Amino acid sequence: MLSHEFMRNALLAGSFVALACGVCGWFVVLRGQVFAGDALSHVAFPGALAAAAAGIDQRVGLFVATVAVGAGIGLLGRGVLVARGGGAGGSTPADDTAIGIVFTFILGLGLFFLTLFSIGSAGGAGIQAAHTLFGSIFGLGAGEARLAAVIGFAIVVLVVLIGRPLMFATLAPDVAAARGVPTRLLGVGFLALVGVVAAEATQAVGALLLLGLLAAPAAAAHRLTGDPLAGIALAGLLAVLSMVVGLVLAYTVPWLPPSTAVIAVAIAIYGLSALRS
Amino acid sequence: MRTRRLTTTSTRMPPESVNPTLSWNVARDLGEVLEYHFMINALLAGSIVAVMAGLVGWVMVLRRQAFAGHTLSMMAFPGASGAALVGVPAAWGYFAFCGAGALAIGRFSGRGPGSPSEQGARIGAVQAAALALGFLFVSLYGGVLGDLESLLFGNILAISDGQVLALAAVALAVLAALCTLARPLLFASVDPEVASARGVRVSRLSGGFLLLLGAAVAATSQITGPLLVFALLVAPPAAAQLITARPAVSLVLTVLLGLLIVWLGMGIAYYSVYPAGFFISAIAFAVYLLARVSVALQGRRAGARAAEARTLEALA
Image (cartoon, rainbow over all chains, first blue to last red; front, side, top):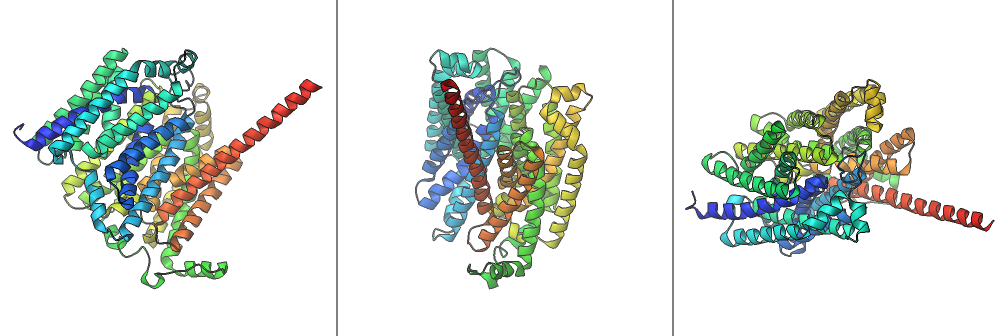
């Protein structure tokens, strides 16, 4: 199996993207921002189309759109965490409404660009490019795979660097702010980082995989352990495990698409963790 | 999907109205728009959906279930691809998967620790599973699934008479169910603990509402496409709830805003090369933004007035 180059590329890129998703996902679930992460994965599409309509590299549009929207959602949500009824907290629920409306508008813009693009002289070639943009993980070249691995690794390092203050700002925002932790900046920066993950995951492994890898392994880790360090490590590990097992499954079962296999494994792990606790 | 694919290529504009132009005579323009049967169907379907989505969405926004609503709208993907695989109309797949999704979300969020972050993760897992299933169906189907644009964004100008009737039936059923559930549902949404102490079956109500939401979303996605459902489901009620706190007024306002968004959007789209979905979502966004800005301005004015009053008090 490993003698195939496409399989080596898929495993390399997939593992690092999964690791980044798992580690970021642990904080996303803790901060109750799964919907925000989901919105970011949808925003990638209009971003790429806008870039295609403007005639610049689609990857630029992809990253700009997800990072900008991530930061925007961070700015919109005044004080990301408002503990409600003594619960562990979640994003202020009214923000969910705002997120929904904003990303619907952005998807509407995507439709506009799609039309603009098909009317324009460029014709169907661009739409073809937009299709391949959400390409399959088995179609990665060696260079793309290495780039995805580097970006994934960089994201993990960044999250680990801001991990302590981010944790503090998430669990006790008022105390953290009083101690001089820039909670607002951290919140915005974190969502921008999730935007980078979304853009990278979208073009490396497909937009479909993002939400599953962001939510399921992290939720399982939150169920299995309350210890932050162990939880973050476990979330990353479970995400990588889902990716590798899913890819191997997809390789051996011919009719099974890789993204379906990866998500199926991730959901199964989450289901098992729910049974256990 | 198959029937849709046949119709979508030809129906954006009928050949005789390739270049409709707007004149200053509004009555004449309106008459021209209404001459076309496809336009009447679109307006009828759009109005039905705007009323239903607005009212169901009003409760959804009140219950803070935007993520659940969005996840249900994503059910259209496995719904449409599953229907294509089995060979039944896409609408059946929409309704089947939206119903199944509503049950799954209700089941998984009814148990266990109920912290909002945990619930979000569970809804996310349901959505990921649905998308993965849709992807599996597409790959098993083997072919190209209709055209991407109408699958994602719907095609409001290709609504048949039968679809209008079906939408009306669904809307009537959903609204009737919503009316019968209204009182306990509002009670359970505003204060679940007190409601459950008073003997209201909160979790069963919540599951029932998710089913209604699923039906509304499935019907709406046939008009706006699954990706733009929120333009009618969230924007009008969110704006109305920002503007007024009185339930009756804000419900009426929701319906009016929804109708305004649909009619304006389709009217503009008729005179433009760009699709109705874009205008509908852009107008919905503008309505919400206006509501938010006006509320913020009012709040500032009220704050200034209060400060002035305090100053006067201090001076006196």
